Length: 363
Image 1: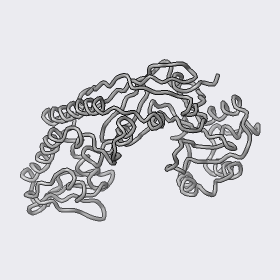
Image 2: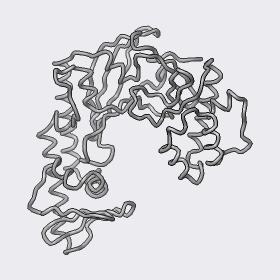
Image 3: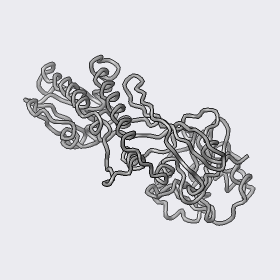
């Protein structure tokens, strides 16, 4: 919207635009808005933009910067809805792709399989890699088994039909049954017998993601995380072992796929622009992947408290010269402990140059 306001020299008299005016504005100036029905519906459900005020203001500033710095022509397309696209474009102006991001050091949120396939190029590509099951299975089982045991110890501490844990926000609960624990929500419940001793995969499968996250994972957060020393010890041992084995595996099998590595850095086979709001607005030109060379310099494992962090140091050569850049991969359960497969968000760590050594800053 900021780009449109600047391009057509328009202004709003109100400090904060209302939802209806915003939608009318987008419908008028975005060429493909009818393709974005699901996104439009989400906006229509909002009463106002008060909680999004800072994001909107940053967007207006980024749009103004785009208009001032780039001489772009053509229709405006809103592409945020195309989440499965190869490219990270949020909008296109004519044939030019533009990615717009808030103040964050997250560069991408790939699967762990994406990293391994880019780093070692196995004959059979990895799929759905669970970093702890894959690289520290013994330690992971000890961590999980201890957690499962502590959860089912609750059975002997409560009376029949008594609520053991309640997550009011979602209406989910854990209740003691006759010879089981009952994990439930507003519309269904699942019984797990005290003698079943399910492994981590089976437990997830039986409960389903929603119930698992809002019962088991929430119970862990309330009862064990940062409270139970043995739980934290086992989690840290699991993370440390996974990191050590991962480092050995990559170093032993290193075979970089430069194209896939660059895609992790959001560099693709076509150039585009990347706008980001830090303390001030910054605009970058992202080069074509053919203009870049990459080599892996070092892998370092850090486990602050109990969370696995993998630091990759790459040398990236492009129009900015040859620069050493450190990226951090944060391996953690983002939606509750033991739920599904841990995420592996990619962060850049340079708080001084930010992305200037990776992309070309437009001043």
